[in-house]
Image (cartoon, rainbow, N blue to C red):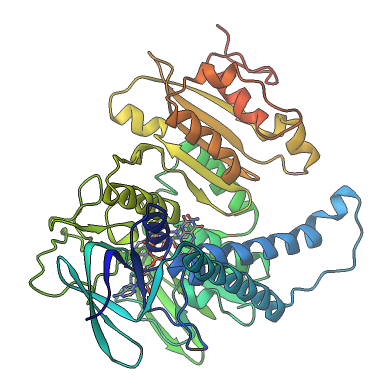
Length: 478
Ligand code: FAD
Ligand code: NAD
């Protein structure tokens, strides 16, 4: 008889591995099943995030950013260098070394916390049983008092652009280009399209982004989205809105893409095409017929606010359930579920989950946009501040962007913070913490910020909510 566990987690992405570590920390006998194998045939933990998502994309974003700084901006601040060259093979090597360090770290954490690592494909066969089929095809059934499904997501594919081995690819392929494509097409101006489009643009590709919607980044406050669109255009990203892709043809190592826009039918030819039109939950083969775990109409595992499925003691977290597909959201759900299983009270604040797009400058936001609030009939007051008036941003030679705070007009409570700037992904933590603590804009306005720091732009935006920004000439009069 195989081992019995208090908890078996299926999937070792940022949802699953965090749930497993937390459960073990809570004194629960825990196993985590993972089927991902790397090119060397070794089981690797970390899921999409560490292997083909957050971490490798950020490694390439950082190296390509450094390259652009050296090529285009060092001279502006008095550093003279010979024309820098991008060594793509070396960049990929660096990216892979970052993946390996991160992935190895999770295995070490499993050992340190006493999580049993089960290698192979896990399938829930009843509310207390998980069948694990190892890489040689041998199946073993383990029993558990609780099961957590953290199976993640996979890219959405669309009929007009069927994937090929190396010309029409998803984000995974776009992290592996061994040379800079001369003409790169990107379908979807979402997070992946803007991040990976930026990487290859910086390294020299002509990048065209085809976006079906007429609006740009509708989830971001429109003032910030407009500023971002302007800045990315200035960098040379050609973002075509209202462009609906209708077909594609691969000819002589090129991809011809057909799309329609306001002017009618169009055609463009690319050397590579990235399809990044969203991701879908991965649930295939994870739950045996008859277990009774319900999926919603979009294929996500149906869960309540605390990630319980409709089957007692079976939970689901991360990308395979509703909510934003973000690593930190998956991890926080993992912690919540482990705590609940350990008998504690736990919940998540889904209103205070930050999002970041790691372009340059970065775009980061938490909570409502001004437009969301108005649509909900909430009266708001807002404060904005440009980084061009922030001393540290000027000293950093990074004066682009602005910060905006949206506060309830009656209570002054912060409802949202939206930023486009260098390091916006770090600055946004202030908005998240403020919202977690139920702060008012005045709370931030009365806080003493270090000088010089780009955080002072947040301070000024908070002051601007009442028209009191110090370093802004055209501030509101009271
Ligand atoms: P996953 O990370 O997908 O992990 C699921 C794991 O389950 C996988 O390892 C899979 O092999 C395993 N699995 C599935 N089925 C089984 C089974 N039957 N048996 C055993 N194992 C199984 N998010 C951010 O927050 N910040 C970012 O900067 C960011 N960048 C991204 C960049 C890219 C290019 C992509 C594609 C995604 C990015 N994301 C980012 C999204 C982020 O990767 C996901 O939200 C996150 O990985 C979800 O975590 P998860 O644990 O739910 O699923
Ligand atoms: P996305 O949902 O962010 O963007 C997809 C875009 O494609 C949308 O703008 C959509 O309108 C457009 N689109 C859809 N169908 C289209 C079509 N047929 N033609 C043209 N455009 C079309 O999805 P993504 O960029 O693929 O990213 C997937 C997920 O991964 C996201 O949920 C995101 O949260 C996550 N992710 C996060 C980060 C980060 O946090 N920095 C980075 C990468 C990915």
